[in-house]
Length: 73
Image (cartoon, rainbow, N blue to C red):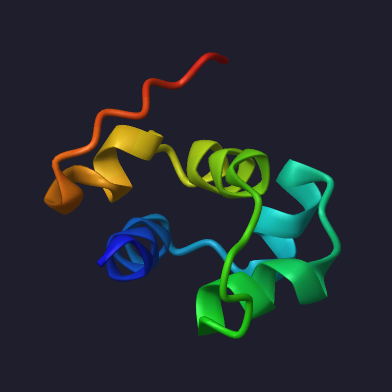
């Protein structure tokens, strides 16, 4: 699942939710809600910003689905 992959990326960086929020210019609560799964259908741009902050790409987190998203940073 994409969320598990995102959590693994976050864990590997050791970043806090607050640090991710600051890097992405998102409210910390939004970041927490996405990582907790509370947000059922987050905007792809929001997910892209978070993934980029933790050093990954959308292709990294959606790899299991077989979809190729392609970041356009």
